[in-house]
Length: 115
View 1 (spheres, rainbow, N blue to C red):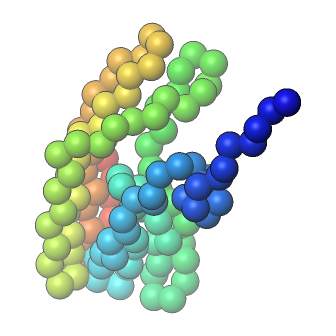
View 2 (view 1 turned 135 degrees about the vertical axis):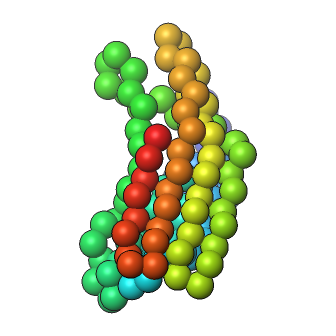
């Protein structure tokens, strides 16, 4: 006989047994976005969504996603501009990669995501 393991509230709501990452709203002139971890989500120009998610995925040789651990995350915000900088480490099987990321939002609405 197998006894079912109770499902936590986080598993019910988010699909995994850990709280969701905190979100932070950012503005670059007429463009708004929500920063969740190292991802930009709900990128909008005015009230129109122009991108649901902008992120970097690292894949293994079988095209599986190798999770990354974020460190050194800093966010600098002005009234209509922002700069986000961070380091991500991916280690799984034969993947061992560390990269630095930078997301910049300018007052003219330009947003860049570099790794």
